[in-house]
Length: 308
Ligand SMILES: *[C@@H]1O[C@H](CO)[C@@H](O)[C@H](O)[C@H]1NC(C)=O
Ligand SMILES: *[C@@H]1O[C@H](CO)[C@@H](O)[C@H](O)[C@H]1NC(C)=O
Ligand SMILES: [Zn+2]
Image 1 (spheres, rainbow, N blue to C red):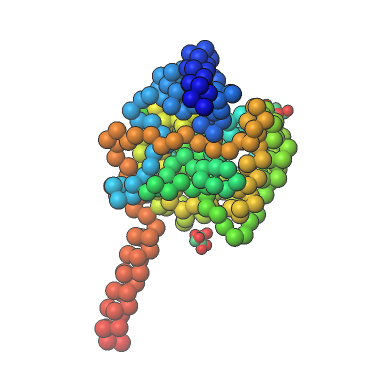
Image 2: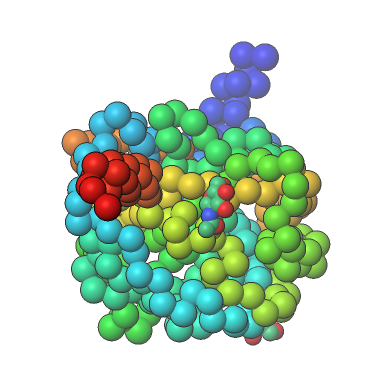
């Protein structure tokens, strides 16, 4: 046994020193027989992965700071229906978005246009999100990647410390299936193998995310891409309200395969140190709703006390 562990350690160090850039993997893919560049070693090939503002993070809600500037985000053309392809890129499933949908407001500097979305998930509906909230890891996480609207490509946007805005949505298990996700989930069986690519029925971004009223509570911090090269160019928004999916819908993602044919599961990066960063939170719908109720109550009380 001891020899086996030693051999594995030797192989792992040999592999890390011998593999080139691009050969990164998730912890779930690492096996003694097939050592690969797991998250702790990403920085050997990608220097930025060892930076001081990395993502994802654990959000400790008690330590977040409420920021009045974090008003509801303006979503433009999120209702727009578009046609695209969905691809198994060996790390996730990804969908390109025609540059029509934009976000602004909500403390963002200027307008950002949507470029692509992809997901991170666990095994058969088990823990799989990248961001965690008070230590809780959700079954899956959606990333809608946007770049500042004046940039033409991601490469340029990645050189700007605020060039990218990613909207992160967590998922929760629900007893009923989410009909709006059927186009995506049905397409997964056609792209099980790495590099599998199929056309997606017409969808809109709005159908994948909660209603605008349910997106007013969110967390904001400055971080990075969660895959190599880990560029520190991302303004993160993580929404409080999770998106419901049934167990069967969540399980469908575990049918996908990494390049070696193994189940594509656990494709998340572990949480990274905050290094003194402050996480902010929006004013939030709950507060707004309760103050509206309070105002209504006062108005009613005043109305009642006035003579007719
Ligand atoms: C997927 O396939 C389509 C059509 O064959 C092609 O145009 C597109 O570039 C491919 N997408 C990716 C991301 O490989
Ligand atoms: C917001 O979420 C709640 C709780 O899940 C739900 O009951 C409500 O219908 C949602 N609101 C809108 C406008 O979709
Ligand atoms: Zn991601």
